[in-house]
Amino acid sequence: MTAHPPRVDKLALTQRVALFGLLGWLGVLAFPILFQAVPAGLLVTSALSTFAAGAVANAVTARIYEHGRLADFGLAKSPTASKEFLRGVTTGAGAALAVLGAPLILRVATLDRSPAAAQPWAAIPVIMISLLFGAAGEELLFHGYGFQLLVRSMGAFATILPVGVIFGLAHLGNQNATVLGIVNTLAWGVLLGYAYWRSEALWLPIGMHFGWNATLPLLGANLSGFTMGLTGFALHWSVGNLWSGGDYGPEGSLLTTLAVIALFLLVTRFSRKPE
Picture (tube, rainbow, N blue to C red):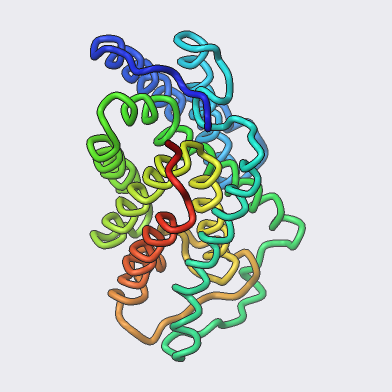
């Protein structure tokens, strides 16, 4: 079982969560400016900034109030850590494959070759690593030390749903955002918070987050409104936006809604809540 801080009184809880939130918010504002000097694209800069903001917010608050260990914000080393991470990657990637595979099999979507839009092959590993850092950064920000304190002090339901709403609203500024896309993103936030609560560690939600985010662009789909053009293949649909997600990508479709419901059932099935 992962070690974690004891419950705290309401005043101490408010102080710790407020400091965590303030540091995370300042990091999200400041690190993109600092990383502008890095000779990299928007994706890499954004991923590094998100990870840095999450890492600093967790490290500082855990250092001040706890022992400053990785265990204090859900990244403790354990015999099951790598297994949970790989299970998360497999689950997230499998869900993305299902969302895109069914339309391709039914021929309501096609993969069209566009070599001119492809990234150089050498850039793909860099982008995959960036997506991993971005997923880890978002999990540290939304389901790290502050979230975990709230879960232990206020309960799972009172924490997971509100934080999931914040997670969804944080993506309102994404390109081509739609109402269904934000609702699905909100549902993903709830799912990832639930995955933490079931496993009491961040390895599973980080794996799920990364597996999903990596698979969609590899198969030519937009990711949360962004077109990456990794392989030179682009996904084109012959059905409406309700099923395709439009320019926001499959995350703005009913297919993702169904996938998130299925993932809730899977997480409940293969992750046992520690006593």
